[in-house]
Amino acid sequence: MKVVQDKAVFLVGDVVAGFPSPAETYRESPLDLNRLLVYRPAATFFVRACGDSMMGAGIQDGDILVVDKSLTARDGSIIIASVGGDFTVKTYRIDKRGSHWLVPANSQFRPIALDETSDFSIFGVVTAVIHQYVHEPVRQGGIESDWLG
Image 1: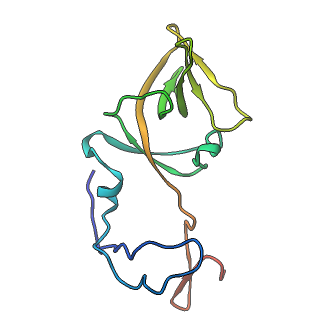
Image 2: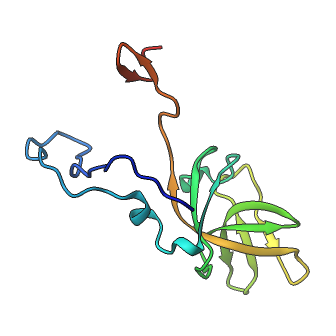
């Protein structure tokens, strides 16, 4: 993966989800999204989520998932897996009896039971979700906006 950085992106500070603070007018150091989201570059890949089976876990259709294939999946890990040759993102669960499951985060979908006969493999553990609010801003009069169009 080749990373090209045209401009430094600066972390300006924290933002309060309440009343604004006038003290937040300083700049911190540049923020490198690769350093923030990718711990092991050689073991990391990105996939785009399709569908809504993981909405309850904050994963929406179109989100980019950061996946680390060097991590070991544990009970409760959100993983990328192959089941019967199809890729899926689900929560990996091990119940009290030791049975393994792939559990969606949407009640409209059913959990997938796994056993020794299952055609199943884990490709990696999801470490971050990138969710964009604006995908293609509209440019009008030199101002970028998604609501002016």
